Image (cartoon, rainbow, N blue to C red):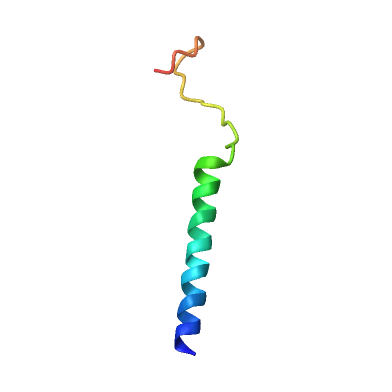
Length: 45
């Protein structure tokens, strides 16, 4: 019974980590507007 619980925990951690990596690097992220411009020309300084 103990090995069954360990296997469930390992597989759930594996699925969560793979899901995180897919969402982080493969999934197309939404583009955020950068409000870091200091003036009107948008030089990004």
